[in-house]
Image 1 (cartoon, one colour):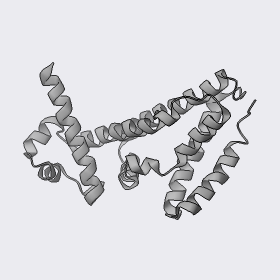
Image 2 (cartoon, helix red, strand yellow; image 1 turned 90 degrees about the vertical axis):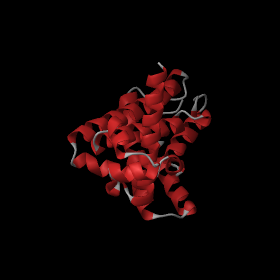
Image 3 (cartoon, rainbow, N blue to C red; image 1 turned 180 degrees about the vertical axis):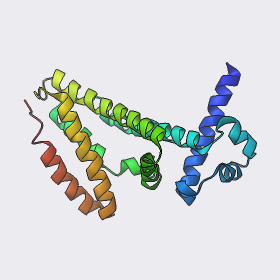
Length: 199
């Protein structure tokens, strides 16, 4: 048990190191050798756990998912009891808090690789399914508590998720000004609310 736990801890340290180095020099520039140098360990030790970069990328994707779920399941988002709670939750999904948890440059560099790596694409699809499910649970909770009355929660989830994903990416490429960003978010939120049937 102790050896297994140590292995898990060591692998997590390497993934965090991989992430931090990717922030510094770019995901595409990180090699196993550079990661070993960054962590001040031997290359053979890294390869003992990750014998190629593809495995590192897969685990990095899982690490990013963990961080994103921390936002969705944070204390402020944990329960939907009123209309304002649901509005606040959806608004939080647009915020730049994502970038506080995971660097956008690393995320989108990883995202770009799914067009060249079928296994990573599958892993990324699973990533999106888990985030979809988290949003679906919040909307279902709102329906069960008679906050909304939409019949098709699956469709509503898909619409909101697509708008958040696309809106976040678009705004990230257009502005660093928080006031401009927030004004655009309000436009998106108002549009999302046309799909939500509140009781």
